[in-house]
Length: 52
Image 1: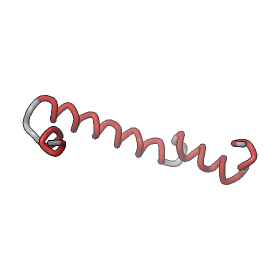
Image 2 (image 1 turned 90 degrees about the horizontal axis):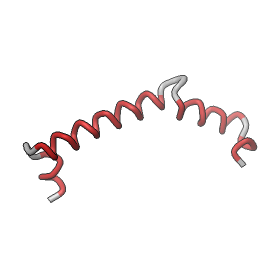
Image 3 (image 1 turned 180 degrees about the vertical axis):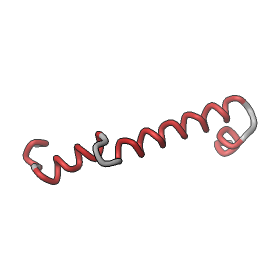
Image 4 (image 1 turned 180 degrees about the horizontal axis):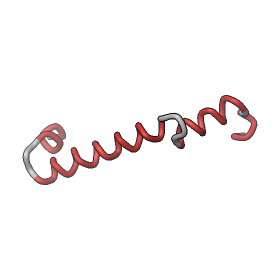
């Protein structure tokens, strides 16, 4: 099962949890003020024509 693969005690589960944690940290940094996603969203709001 998928839950066992993520929540289990095997090395694969540990690896998946560590990767998920790193990805979560990357997302949080991107959304922080000055982060890449924050900057892009701000640009989109200010000047939508630059994305067309």
